[in-house]
Length: 62
Image (tube, rainbow, N blue to C red; front, side, top):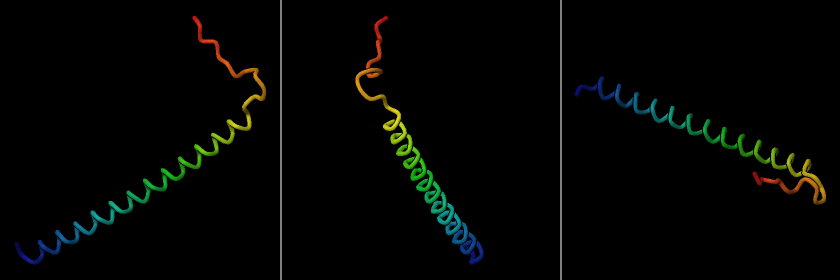
């Protein structure tokens, strides 16, 4: 193996690691956004839930 091929492999390896790190950061950001959206949905459900006993039971008998 000559020096130029070693340098090319090192560069490719570095680029792959950088791309992997960027992908991981994007995945983490997407998961954080989904967590925030889920929390907002749960808050909206708590606000819109009916008070008292009406609407609390679903008849599933067929």
